[in-house]
Image 1 (cartoon, rainbow, N blue to C red):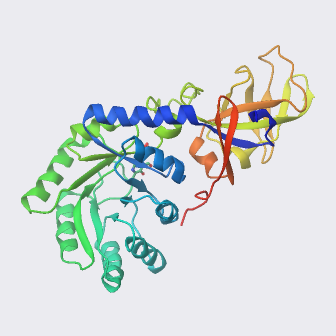
Image 2 (cartoon, helix red, strand yellow):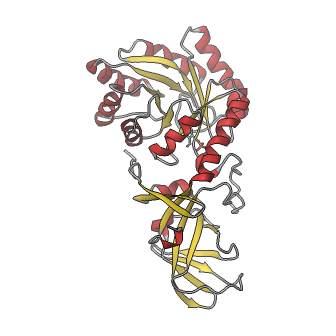
Image 3 (cartoon, rainbow, N blue to C red):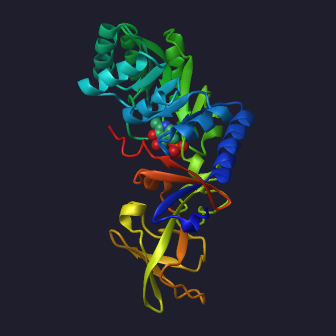
Length: 350
Ligand SMILES: Cc1ncc(COP(=O)(O)O)c(C=O)c1O
């Protein structure tokens, strides 16, 4: 079936482009000599995670437990959680996962580590732990090399936890002194450094240069290796690089310069500012706005005539956001439908 026979709006993934992005990143990391750990937060799709692992990703990394549970149920193993797991309900779920999968989790405080330790010890399981340090991301992470060392030592005293090393995000060369000092302190204190984990698509070389043992990348599955960070002008959207598209139908042509499609904010997510996406059928068509369930397209730039019922394919600007909104994702090759995948990871934000 051709994609234009699908009911719309439909989210489709061009598997040829997806495979190329996954293989390119795996080759890139192999050439650099850094171990890749594929992030799943971009797609939350076990099928894609398995493709990442088959291409050379060492285990996976998840941000949320719901995603990790979905991946574990699908057979994926060696799961790193780069998130402080806080609260009884979540700690129980983490410990439950550790009962049948190899789990490692990052922490940046004794409070988080102690909560996990208590439940893990009660259940008789061991969970790997990395100390997260802030190397300039200004999000989570301990705030100094001394604090990293202190937390590492405290974790070693806690039952049910096995300290495995360090983690930070993103990998930035400008933080080299801080990174060196943090690693140095761990070494001098004889704390384990089996894993030193950095991350961020496009920062693989930085992870290697900083002496990390592995690199976490996620966005590359949808945006490719050569993502133009922060370009924001649409130049980073191309069908050769972006496998994810939204197929829409024109539902109204109210004026000679305006088309309305059946996909608005609830299909595309609240878009970042313009451009909203690239319309592949005619790049001279430009989104001019979004209602909740309608997309507004300015057609002044093209001489082509479009009618009610015509289909348009869009590469959305924020692809990760789009996958998180739809129950079904359609796998395609050469614009032909291969199969429809139930998007079970969507909305798994707990
Ligand atoms: C902790 C952590 N590691 C790795 C990544 C992967 O970054 P990217 O999506 O740029 O590959 C992210 C992205 O948000 C992250 O938060």
